[in-house]
Image (cartoon, rainbow, N blue to C red):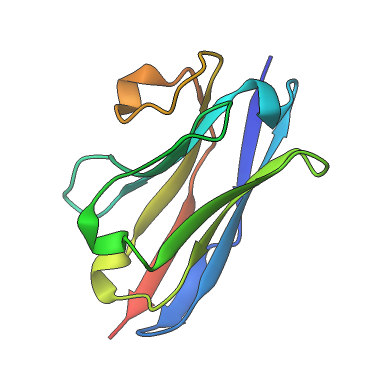
Length: 124
């Protein structure tokens, strides 16, 4: 049983930064493909970044490129999403996802394990 738990969301002003964390239990993050998704108001859940078992990275929307960085810490058995230069359009619930297959996947339906989500709100 893999359990994922996100933390680090909150309210931040435009231009600010947040670091989201996803702690895994039941399996090592090194043995999972991991990803961050987000779902804004009235929008579909979309990929932010995905990290395969061997370190291959895929990113989602171009709008986050250069501002968001996903990392993995196998000692803490966690993955992180560093978000800089936040904009109001980044407001969303952010979800951590995991899958036992190897490569980074871009579709939400390709992940078996999900956290409960953490709210990020960026004020103008």
